[in-house]
Length: 328
Image (cartoon, rainbow, N blue to C red; front, top):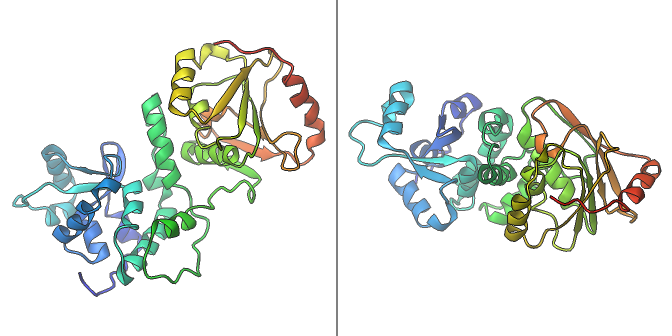
């Protein structure tokens, strides 16, 4: 492995990001250069840890993809000659984060930090989820991706360890939308991933109960609840306008996530706005007023605001609990 520290600037890293199969990726030979490996040695390191790299983390280009990329990109054409023995591997963003737990040493640590910073700056290049969130399976994949694609607020300047481990990476990307720190969120048109992360973070903060008031629900409403703590009871108040959520979807979700306990009740047609009640009636109580439904968060510009004076909303929560069960 090279001992030279190859620090890449933002423009250089931008040029190494390609769109393949509808997602933003970096290729093995570019990542090998960044981390100071030759490509063969780099891929051997990954192969030795192949259980960490699922298909949505790393995939090998087809010949058609390979030729198409070479025809459109002069840099790729230079590095990927027709004499190349094997087709290159593409790493998605979550795959690149996983590399940080595999490649170790002084150079790997420095370059990992540089990549983390550049991904913060290049969020719009990495996240293109709006067209992905269109089916139950891809919703789940997108949410998993977004957990690894969170906007980084700050880098821990006290990190001095020379190896990047899973625990270190977790600490670096943990605090992106912590509801204990952040009370208000604004999502501009198209920022669907940011909205997903915010809702998931708010739900994850609950210790006992979650009340959600939203007449326009769907499968994604449920998927955003998958990170809820096992002992938390979720009550979803909705009239299911437009029949956005189907019974089979609810049953499938409950089967896949048995630790998420969800009750459905009606709103009786008197609510327009959306609300989230976290740990209602406890000392940890938080109430959020949402500008739109969670399943549509970020499709258009919208906001989530924490209510400062919760007393005026208590009657809403108490009345809602008296409502009849919603049958899908």
